[in-house]
Length: 293
Image (cartoon, rainbow, N blue to C red; front, side, top):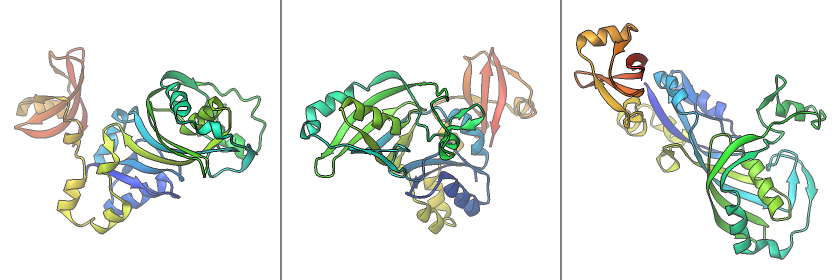
């Protein structure tokens, strides 16, 4: 089976755990377009079979998150799994709704962000969290800022009793929500960590169209159910223009021969007698085979 299934990842399991389970269900190669931390929940698109070859087209997608931020405490990992390293009293004025809205809006737009020390970014051949877990001095580690963009950020709820703020954010690839929470807290003159994180959307993959791993295990032998819940490669590229090849040209195309096509550079759906064959790319008027179903 080739296609994409959107899993609603539960809490306290890794993305690798989910990939392993789906691999056992289908007996196919399985990949993903970007991990979710064990504590995070939500959209985890899984690429199955030949669809794993599509990952290069999906890794730069924008993402949308539902975030719960805990005020008054700072942890060493910037999330709820870490050790509390600082506490601070919260003034009542911090919970002024208009002030919070205005503070959140200041983060919209293009900016640079310093990744958290507990992240998988490599510096001098080692992942940052490897330095942190070994207790090494990170002051001499050159953590370079990353270019990110916050497209929209919206206040959802203020919980004065539990000292929490909930917001929804749409952002570019590479944005660390843990760092965003700490930066927002700084603007509010306090400290905070990311208590909960739910990914609502990755590109066009939405949580409303996701399924649980339990649902998949229960219905793995129901062909009609699988058909309704899998995104085929043809559907994935449905916005791309179509090229119909004759039998002769198809034979050449499948054998890796570049075909002359006076069309714009880009990705194209390839058909033969109205049957979807796969994906090709055009560069400088030459059509080249890319992914074949």
